[in-house]
Image 1 (cartoon, rainbow, N blue to C red):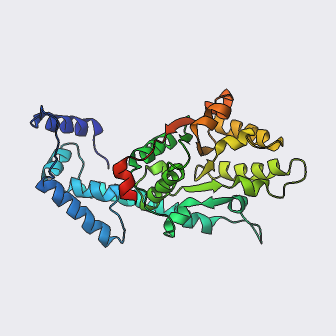
Image 2: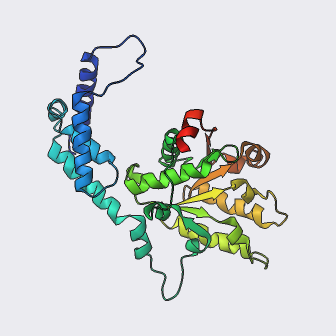
Image 3: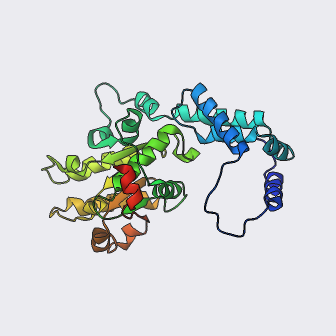
Length: 306
């Protein structure tokens, strides 16, 4: 927005230090009149723009419009108009990179079909079509996945938890955030492709046929400039668990160099037992992933889900 970040940070710290401190633990927080006004303004903007949810940029613009905040930021050369202009540019860039636009822009020539669409499901498209249920009580895990994906290196989260705890639901929650724009710029417009290992293996009778299919999928992901994120449920299967063919081991070997070069962003999911039994034993594969542990939902969360 063209402001002086150093001055803005200094002004923010000064204001925070001037506020009274509460020594005792806070058990009940009551929103101030200013906060209610900001949320109300953000809701009005969201409705005017046809959004179903309040987005981060709408909250930011509403906050900057507050008299005290506006006065503080003005000293750093930041105005409400500048913030609106910056937010509009981000939204415009995101629209050009939307998953639906990505479907339209891909050109395959004649009757050629996208390889990844043959062997994977677009979770973000499912979210856009309203086919996913709301994800309750997993904000912390979703935020952790977002942080890992936004890294420069080791940006491949692997969700580790017992069967049925909601690992796939976390990926669906991330897809819903992408649709609503509640993600960093690096994830805006991305598509999460849930790889169907069964479809890749099915009918692959000839030697090397499975590997060729997987190579084609990985090539398409690598050439997407970060717009395609691969989700592999039961990721330990690529290391040969449960299969006697050499294809599974070759699958891991195909993934490793792409992960090492940062050409592939992947979300994996597996149980703690399978992770220790298979993935930990392959250090070259394991070190490309950042563990995100998924515990069982609390009683309160479970009741909310029901």
